[in-house]
Amino acid sequence: MDVTPYPVCRLLWAPLLLAGAVCAHAQEFTGTLGKIAQTRTIVVGYHESTSPFTYSVDEGKPLGYSYDFALKIADAIKRELKLPALNVKPMAFTTQNRFPMVQNKIIDIICGATTHTRERENLVTFSNTIFVAGAKLMTRKDSGIKDYSDLTGRTVVTFAASTSEKMLRKMNDERNMRINIVSTFDRNSSPFLVLQAGHADAYMMDDVLLFNAVHQTWKPDDWVVTGTPPSFEAYACFMQRGDNAFKKVVDQEITRIMKSGEAKAIYQKWLMSPIPPKSVNYAFPMSAAMVDLFDRPNDQPFY
Image 1 (tube, rainbow, N blue to C red):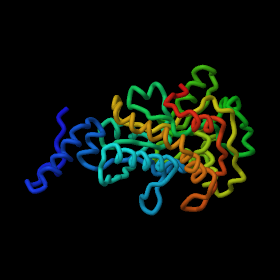
Image 2 (cartoon, rainbow, N blue to C red):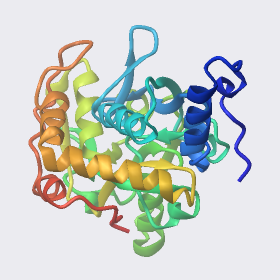
Image 3 (cartoon, rainbow, N blue to C red):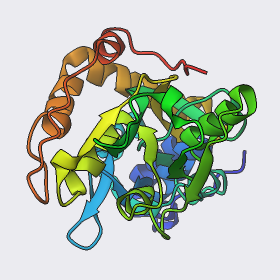
Image 4 (cartoon, one colour):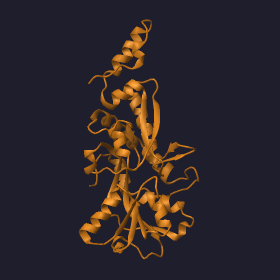
């Protein structure tokens, strides 16, 4: 692969030996690692409203459980490339454009609340799993909805292009449940707003994201998160499809974070403690699936 030398290669003869060494080292890498070595910048994607995984405060400052993983991955890449400094450039994405942003090399890596599925492996390469969630339902306590079997003939809202939307359509196809599915987009009317306005009976999404939605309501006690998950969701970071050298560095760092105990500290920080900007505490206990993941890091999707 033709790798354009980093601008330091054009320095004059005085520091020739040093410049030559830096340039030669940069040219050892290809793909995303080569790009980062040349530019000394990693572009990290974040979603603006998927708290506690990634979200923004203070006019665009990204935060969250997954973003902490991304920052540690950036440090690992800096060590791997032996760079004296690495610029981390945050870039916002939406549910709809996240995969094209990576495919078109606009964003180098995204760590958020994206589910790793075998079908999506045709689009991008996924890292080791960073979180395990279960799809549930948010509904009013007096709605009569306790589980998925109660959705027959009801209206359910979720994000367009999400795994929840796909599962709802599968329920209609396989069980003839006649669910009226309302799909919304990030920068239009969110599922939460549709539900709160009374235009849907339930909101289907990953459990921890629904707990976040409950905390955003005027009267949290009026709402409940319920249902037996029809499947579990393996959240993972993702990058350019087939970039195995980059994936190796990312996976090694995720494994290190989990084996060292740092992952438990990150979990405690974002899911068991008050978080900015309103000091909300999700009080979301670590599941058996998460304990197992931290003990045995892996990159396997659930479906």
